[in-house]
Every structure is written in C-alpha cells, then in structure tokens.
Image (cartoon, rainbow, N blue to C red):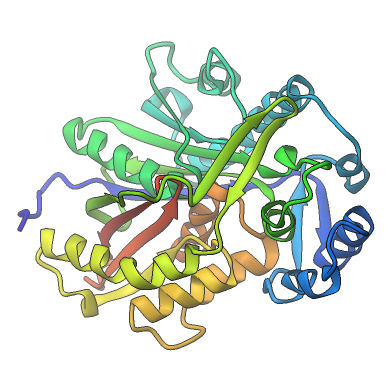
Length: 353
C-alpha cells in the first residue's frame, strides 16, 4: 500500500472546446448508407450501430461533404495541425481562466494527441499562441489513443507531486474525423464512422482547491496489441478496431480497479465517483458490469457520449469538466478517472473529494 502524500496535487479546473460543424447522428447514418451502398450484403443491419450508439450529435472540423472525398495524408495532416492548434488554444485558455491563472504561471504542459503529427510538436506552437513562459517544460505524448486523457492527468499529477510549487496543464486534442478513409469498406471503418468525433480538453493541476489526486495505476495486457490502433497507409491513418473491446473491459477492468485501490488502501466499493471515458454504449455497459454498478449509472459519461460521441483522449476530460461543475469539496469521497486505449491498456487515476 502506498501512503498518501501531503503534497498531493489537486485538479483545479477543466475546460473543453469543439469545432463548428455539429452533425446529427441520423444525417451521418444516411451519409454512411450512401457511401457504403453495395459494399456489404447486410448493410441495413450493420447501420443499426448508429441507432444503438446512444449518440445524438457530434462535432467535426470539416463539413459532412468533406468525408465523401479522397484526401492524401499531407492534406489531412495540414488540417490537423491547423484545427488541433485552434481547439487546444481555446480549451487551454478557458481552463486557465476558470482557475484564475495566467499562462506564464504554468510550469509544465503535457500535450496529448494521437490523430496527427507535427514536429515541432503542437505544444511548441501553443506556447507562443497563449503566452506561456519560454521556459515552459513541454511533454508531448503520442499514441495512447482513448487512454490518453486519463494517462495525461496521471503523468501530470506525478510531475506536480515532484514539483509542488509548479502548476501543470494537460491538453488533449483529437480530430478523429480527419482519419476517416472513404475507400475503406471494413466493418472497423463503419464502426468508427458511427462513433468518433473531434474535440479538445484541458485540465490544470497543482496546489489549491479541487479533487486531490492520490495516485494512478497503469496496465497493459499482453497479446492485445492488435485490438485497437492505426495502420499507416498512403492516405493516412486507417482505423483498427476489434469487436472484443467490450469483452476485455468486462473480463479485466475489475481486476485493474482492485489493484489500483489496493495501492492506496481504498476498497473498490468505496469509489463513489466514476469519471469514465465514454468509449461507446457497449463499453460503458461493460464498465458498469465490471464495477458492479447499476445499469445506466455512468450518467455523466453517457451525457458526453450522447452530445459529443467518442473524441478519443479528450473525452474523459469532457466528463471531468462536467464532474467538476457539481463537485462538492470536503466530502472525503473517493473516485476514479478511468480510460482504456491501444496497447491494449487501462489507466486509472484515484482522487479524493
């Protein structure tokens, strides 16, 4: 068991940003119907995933007609750099404003993304856009996918614990829509089309008022590297998405939560708050079963899924933002920020209100 530290950092604020093109799930479904017509014998049955997703609206940085054309990887990536920077700046600025913090007060920035590339990494550009100190410590993290938001908070908390006099900002931005491959007629691509979206989020950690981060727990399971990820093709990032994800959540998540709780002397049943990445309706159902929760208990996660879809690493920070809106300080109740991602891996961040 790890003893609680007196200099545990707090989650001071969180904020989000979405691009301007808001689309109804129904119109995306009909677009997919036209696009995939003749490619599947049972297309109508497969399209039911749009209806069963529990998603009503999603946001994208490009209009719907953009997705019906072929694009090269350089064209997609140029859009990623442009829009990811814009959204990151909005989310970061809102996060700092909510905490009453000036950019130059931030000591380190963890920048999380998986849906595009840039060298220098986008945090270097964000530094000057927002007016951070030129001595800002930049830690870009790539490839964690949907687990990235929770992992970013975990690594930022580790940093803040080591340097308690500094404020640490986490920014997660994903433009999943830009990875859509119009010529990919796999079921994985159809599932991704029914689920993924664009968005950015930020969280600020350090000394102050807010949930106390007790620590974190990371797990990567062997022989699961092909469960989820990207395949790099000439036209960009092609999604790889196995049907076994909900089953993995059901079989293995409970054990990782127990391991995390044991490290910090907490019983799993003492977790009163679950800030869970809304990976999809089936994934949330699997989480509820694994955590022995009543069906439909993950209200905030389902709310984000309904209104925004799955924005990969940024999604769990959208849930965190909603949680902080209703946060009651001093209750002493425990909670966890949890997400799953490529690897296949799990991230849990334990906190106390």
